[in-house]
Amino acid sequence: MALLENLTQQKLKKFNKAEVDDVVASQLDPKLANTLIRRLNQIAPLDNLRHLKRVRKNFGRGGNTQLSIILCLAHSETLPHNVLDLVNAYHLTPFLTKKKELLERSES
Image (tube, rainbow, N blue to C red; front, side, top):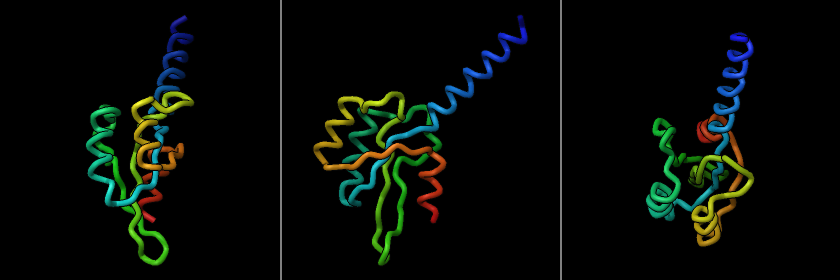
């Protein structure tokens, strides 16, 4: 019985970890970064991910600077209403990614 409980706890930990690793992000114009960071910190704070930067700088072709921003954690198939309003207002294109992939993308 204890073995079964232990296995169930391990599965729950893996599920919770995988869920936290999925984030919704978007590319954005650097001019919008400050505004979006302030709004997102109010409506979708990343409380459990304080060690992770919300915005990453990427260098595109031709040396153009691009930014990636984490919009929110991916808990379900839909975005929270406040985040969706922000996406629509600033014409963002959200994509689902893992924190690790977002970090690797910013380093390359």
